[in-house]
Image 1: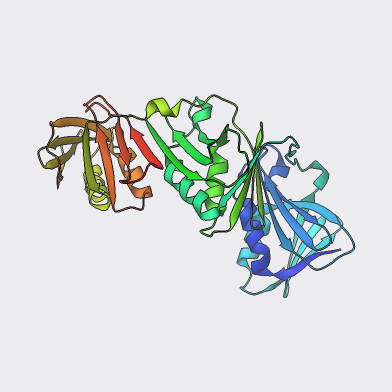
Image 2: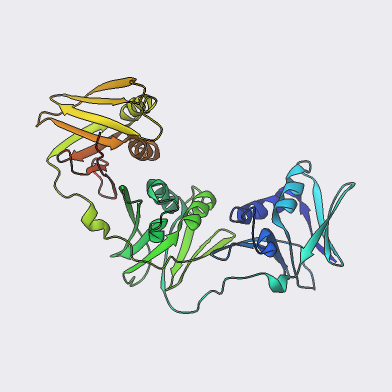
Length: 369
């Protein structure tokens, strides 16, 4: 049976969309496969890791017969990628094999039954539904995702808190040492307040798949799942079951010492100083005084780095330490000319914001140096 015939690029695009969540090594062999589901005028490419499922749809020639099979995703992807640009490709089912044909090339791939492919069951219960532009969600994710924890025993920190409240979408991440918050307005009717925790993998895949366009992404949140629909892509994700920390209590309210800093100048100074921090102890020291901010660090080999920035500041002096990686992360992911830094004393967290905006906040705890 001829499953599909099209240009190489037309097949590569949906396959590349879904294969990002497929792990290299699985205890279940079928999780290394992509499900090809053929109906009248479309073919769906589906991949899952049990927690997240991504479906990409492409148009196909009309056919009478519906058919579903699964085949090794990486092998199929590598074969298509290795074929010449613009090549015509045919996918043909023969017995229990999928033959990939292009010109005089032939590849016969083993298939597994589609009946054994574990689909996520999409719940019917009414949840919160709203839509925002793709580029807005992509931007909000970019402002916070770097502060997610990685493999923390507090599993709920290995993800992102999504809050719908008063017509706003709020995204929060924290690893226990820093916290990032970003918000934007959403379109939807009578949106009730809802909080969900999305897994780290879901956030990484969404960030890769969303485009910088005004085209909408439709979001549906239920008690156990989140569903994102945009373009020809549908991503369904299980939610993390846990209690996220109260982020509003972590964000400092009244920081007496405030200074505006040129983002790129500060970033470059920190990147230079970071060269001489020790790999294990990434500490950098800030000494704030009349009109100057001195940034310094040293390592176990008695090497030292010092940077000095002119700042508009005339308050009390301050000596405080930070993990330099946490500062570089936030400055690298912002796309603004200036940042504002609010400071308390040497034991208080610092608050980074964007002047004139309340939709972004970044909190970083101090460290002893």
